[in-house]
Length: 195
Ligand code: ADP
Ligand code: NI
Image (cartoon, rainbow, N blue to C red; front, side, top):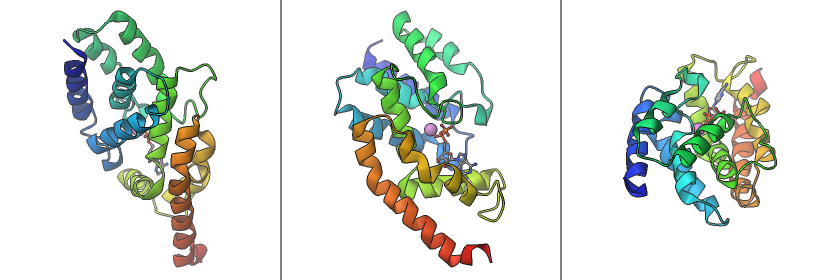
């Protein structure tokens, strides 16, 4: 199987794996993360095949969705070099923000790229939509409780630019952060800060 075919099969596998996730973690999230990853990757010397594989697979094993070890089985069925398979499996656990908000300094560039791209997709207008989609899927309030979506803005999203690893991603995050902050300020205004 050539790399093109491997990527095609991997995309298919990842899209079907996330079909039961909330709309913020669907096929389109994977396609956005792939596109953002390749955009960041264009500023660095790196293995874009590995970047693309990680982008497709980064959420498959997310314990928010309680799936397990499906990637290992899938990669074993693919005709893929053992070395790349081992590398992918060793990097995937680090894709999660709640487990690894910051990556080890010597973490491979391909992993940093996909982690940053995933975080960029939690910012900007899409980030706002994803947060409410995720909160809604869990039956959470929009605001006014400690597990509300607005609380998630305060705890995580409004500081997410501090958890990016690469200069290219930090640059791309600027406009998205500004948008998120102005959305947050406007939202607070419209709800009269909960009063
Ligand atoms: P990670 O698992 O590394 O946090 P994901 O891409 O899987 O990254 O998911 C993060 C997305 O889910 C973001 O868009 C984020 O806003 C949303 N999300 C996660 N936790 C919450 C929460 N408690 N409330 C609202 N949105 C959330
Ligand atoms: Ni993701």
